[in-house]
Length: 521
Image (cartoon, rainbow, N blue to C red; front, top):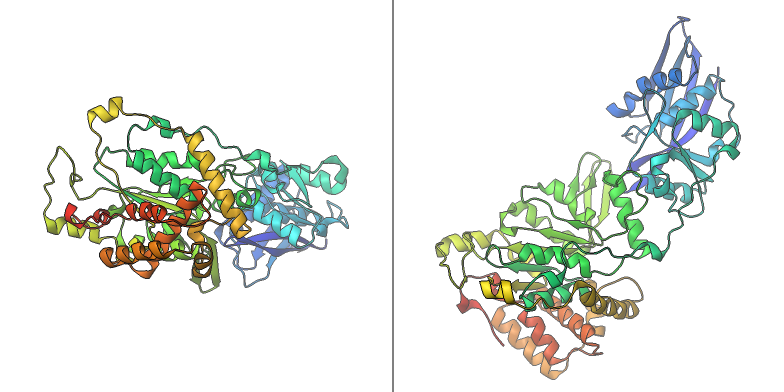
């Protein structure tokens, strides 16, 4: 009986860190008994590994009795969570029992996997992050469950050894040639947009709203849709995903890493190849939206990374929940602080919100009267603070549709046709910034460089700021929208008509009740 050391992984936020799995066996006082103790700050799931490991080892044909085993998961000050230490503990146990020879190449692999009582291996979370750690550490490869092999194989330069049973891992250690590494060559050919569930051609009327959504998708701008119930706000929001550009390889890996850590990646799916569309219910907590936990996990804003976060019935969300959106919308990332460190998650998403203009929803309806008082309307809209309004680039009225518009209105362009213009505008931005960056992400310095205004535009912008009472942040966002409109029209510079259209999508009637507050230039 002896000592063995293997290498596994712990997840810390979106990152994986190396964990040494040390297994030591000593003779037991009772020849027919065995015991196993796990130390190294394990949580309940890790502590329960001893029962799964002992049963799996026995059911795999390796009788174990007459010893006492101590398993140390180092470093000892890092809390270990999850059930993916089962496989390295089981292999370390067999090596220490001298039932399995410790091969010299074993330290070259990271080992992860949850064992069933029969010895079967079950899927784990965070396989992509673990494979990235193996590459960063210069390891030869990673041994993990078959269900996660395709995901991990997206990382080039390492061997991904897929095992479906404890016996498969044992056989690999005996003869590495018995299992071929899993391959999953990632290329841009993987990222082809599927047929959208809602096509813009299916939406009759609302031409100005469709135009606004084209601009939002082209520049990555946040937008809020305000209109009576049934005017098509939700349908239009769902159609936006069909005009978004295809994912790049880098974006795909970023999305897959987040979804894998959270555990929502479908079993057997290697990579996320479509932009995410997240639509949380308005009863969500701020921790569910931003992320949280003792060891923080990403929230909805991170699950929407490189995609769309749709907030339906915006004023129904808790004000405290909405206020935590400020940092993610501004910085494109969120940092959560805990006693054991700071955790930063990416939040580069488009925020599309929908709301009624008043509590009853009939304010501005052509055929129905609003029954709400001015005080009720003010309270309803007051749930959304001024700083949050500033971070929403486009405010769009979605009027109610009459029967004639619904039945006989023109369908307009398809999502595929609109998407071609969006992709062309995004390509202009890629060349401008030299990387995957949109106009909505421009810094103040970049805004001055790439969105210079002539004298007529400055005069128009000054009038808009004075009359509409916009803050400096809102003014910058207005110019960014104008820059996107110029890109869609193929113009090198922002012209007066581009700025005029951008102002039309900053309608104050969304924020303040009554037509008298709308400003027309």
